[in-house]
Length: 260
Image 1 (cartoon, rainbow, N blue to C red):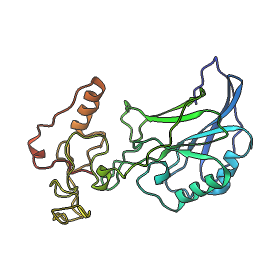
Image 2: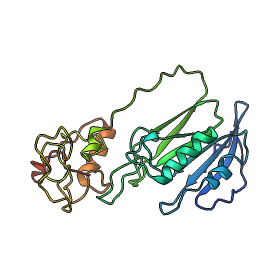
Image 3: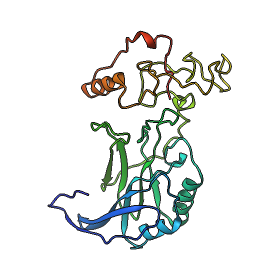
């Protein structure tokens, strides 16, 4: 963890956790004390409430933010799916008066074409007297995890209740999640319909499920958010420069968005 020298801070003692790791520092700014933890939960670990209690309630009245790769998915913090471990985190948070916050866009783009981008990098926090905001940044390091900027706003802000978000249509048909400018299409055959949905007018996708979907960008045998996809790389550069990439790859004709 990096802290500016002009900020009063001190390292926190290590907390003995069984299924996760956390490195902490306490900072003091504007007369307030805040405990910050960089947290990591391995994908194979089982989330235990005992670890959550040790991490968040070692100092019961302290303001705490534990942010990092929690490897937890739940619709409550903008993930596409949820399972037992994530439900356990949500129930523990509701029972102990703390919050779990995730950004609006995916933080992890797996290399496995059978896995979709999702939100697994989170901020777990309690006793904050400031509004917490998360924003996914453009990844210059070409990692499968996008960098996330966490901001604490202490000034009073008028906040309206968020409008319930309909499930993203792109995720329903497993279309690219990085704001691809191509139209949505079936993931397996590339035709402009949504497979296995009530509003699908073309019926089920005729392409076998075991056959991998081609990339919407270059037509290759990988998903459109693969960091090594040549067209995706160009789109990142063009996005940074304020322009839009146009794919003229002949192999991509007829595949208007087939991706994972």
